[in-house]
Length: 193
Length: 127
Image (cartoon, rainbow over all chains, first blue to last red; front, side, top):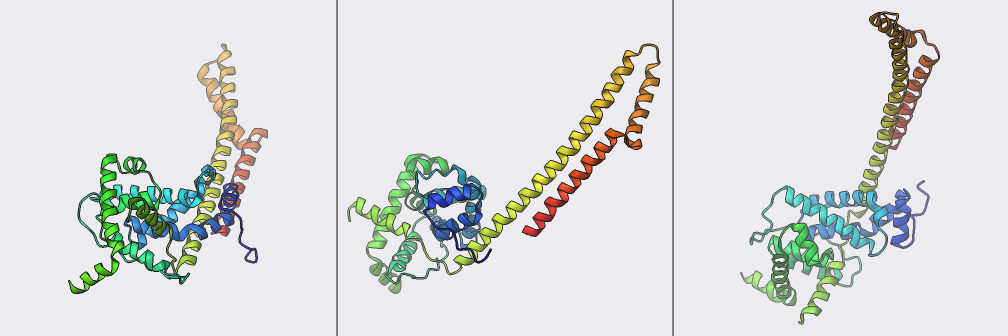
């Protein structure tokens, strides 16, 4: 019924309702976490269309497995892990050269500053800075800081040594630190370059 | 900037999810996919129930036919081939003559078809 108010409550309560088959409760979880999952997939390196397809698949998978969500961690983190796993599966299937040292251009993330407090500006800074990373660095940094994966989890999922993950994260952090610390300097260089 | 500070800042930046202008459309598409999956599951359950019902009916009829055959084999005074032919004829008679077991089979088949039709109708309504 269209007049019904959307379900409210904590994510854990909504997940319990969803586990009992309440699709409206799950719809509320999608509304709350949809943008975060879509954003994460873009930051991992997916183009807009792929990111949205995978985000939808992640939420469908999440609904099928929501009974496994016990509320030990945040629902947002749980669904992001599912999305990240789906992305890695796709990347592996397409046999991309993930850990090459080339920096590939990625699409802009279109954002709207709903809060008006400059948060969108910092997000754009991050998204711009992520573009300067190689695909491997970007993937490792986004998995560890965006999806809260440990180095060991990332290494296992990517099927690479943990030392490789750590070195990609370190190089990625160094680049991000330089880029985020001096955004105006970088912009000046680009303008003159 | 110290490493832990920068990592905390980075985690904060990652936690700030972007706001997408088409968020409502995305939510609607997920809901639609969920509904479609639910409908497909219903159809699958209906089909599985139909198949199971038909299989059960066939098994019941087969077991009766087998017991008829074993009864015939025990009867040593008659030609086995003749008796099997008679058994087959009887089995055909069960199917075509509509005695109690034949009625049960047709009833089971009818119920199975009704169940399938119900499941398909609900699925179509949901779609």
